[in-house]
Length: 464
Ligand SMILES: [Mn+2]
Image 1 (spheres, rainbow, N blue to C red):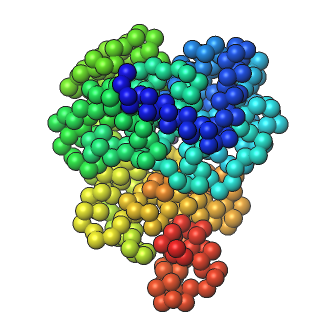
Image 2 (image 1 turned 30 degrees about the vertical axis):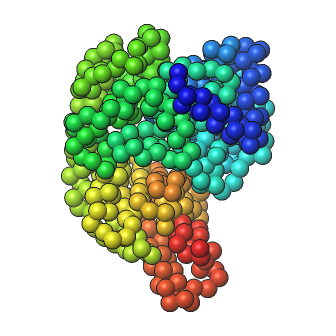
Image 3 (image 1 turned 60 degrees about the vertical axis):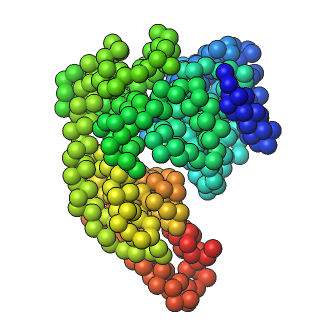
């Protein structure tokens, strides 16, 4: 391996030296490996989550530990879920939670197991006191993915493999930490991406073809890593398609995706030689190929519909230099993803930044997502404010959750607890608050309480 590999390893060492949480986890993982300990890993059910789990399993098992991977639905791991799975899996020496948040509510789980380890990259306003945790993005700094953090930890324990690199690349792609077509990569992921590009250049090669959901800047080209990430991410949601295709009945998406990730290593796929031109070619290499093709067909159908819905966006507010757009739909689950593409199209026609809010009514919940191009309004904080508002107003703090990153946030309201019109009412009230704060701020007469409220709403351009 070339110098990029050494540079990356040195960079990981430097990060480790400066971060206590990283060192503590490193030590804990080393002990587990040495004693052949059993690890129960709960990971998020998306591509970053499944690749994080694949990295931890491959890496820790190479070191001598035993890893059991689970992908329960939802974001936060609940005590009830943990208890149930602990009973299934006993004895468990450590519970590893990857890509599922880093807030103080996780301390609760230490009553069920003394060793809880969190590896995560979601911003959070509180941090656990009784868990071991590593999250360089907790106060919203760095663009990264949980799979990248897992890769760093495994690398720091002296294990390397092109499969680990492949997994981490997919996780980073899934969470928009880099763009192989434009060459853009976040500061924090750069040493890894530079190294991976040298190790697996075929995956970075720009090819003409159908743009994937990740190809936002250019709509006539893509790369193999984007193509693979798109189908594998779609496979994480395969269970949602089971009603539409008998071929997909009984499938749980994250488990399917994880199985495919594992197959690549078990069958020792020559990653450097993956030079397909159509993604279907790649799918055919798997025993699950037919299932994957079916998922891909349904996914593309949904994608086209979601893109059509995006034609109906409306501008509903301006806050600071950001234009806020809105669109609403039903039973079109890919709308938040299509919104990322639409967002950049809107941005090209606006002078300032753009934020796009999507209200989507699914079979069991209302999903409100926000995507932004700039750093003036924090999408995660905005939707956290909406969730808290609904929670306080209707006593639904446990049922309604919201949060996320600077440029992508989400709030989920189960339909059985609140109707669409009530959610809309609260959202409108929130918009009204934003309008008022913006107005007073422009006039220079925003009171102190207004600055505090602006912070809660994620209006970062105020009070800087
Ligand atoms: Mn993630």
